Length: 280
Image (cartoon, rainbow, N blue to C red):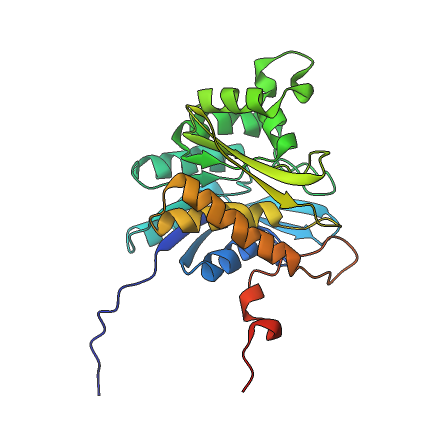
């Protein structure tokens, strides 16, 4: 017996990111987060990595022609509701991804501008950041840097004091690069609470304080950006989506676990744990 199915699909989010064999960050984190937010993840692998919960040992970019092939194949088959960009692997990959997303100007683009691992391993050269500024940021709906990444992105403006600029100044300059919104996270700031601030063309749209948890987390930025892309894919406005994404991320960190010798890993399926299951 055959059955005709006309069930609507969940919102589709297409991710460009590197693979992380720990499952803590990268494409694996994106898949779990997007699924946990009630969307369906589509993935384009931009690089392979050898890493653990301590740091990144090696990164191997995927050939840009194959990045194009991966993306075009799924985009010609399925209508997506959001893009999410993480580690892109090479200058060539940044250029071709910019070309791909330019064909979908009405689809939200969330950019997580990852420049280094938690240990400080370099994941984006100055040349790659320059290419990102030129081709990706003008197409971004929102970028989600931490304080260190925000200052690194504006370093092109010159001046030896760029690493001392206020986040408000950084946001203004990042918006001038073309992104519609900037969500700067306070995880790297020396403050009692983590304050995440959403900026738009008119200034601060919202500033949300969260309790600073002990320890450090592998993949918290990936989680936030993917959760934000998912909230936008569900049709939420930017302010609401930013708050929803922060709340989801906060819950994953509270439920985080430490499987190795390095950082904690967020639990993107915190809601499915034994503590959340009703007894019979």
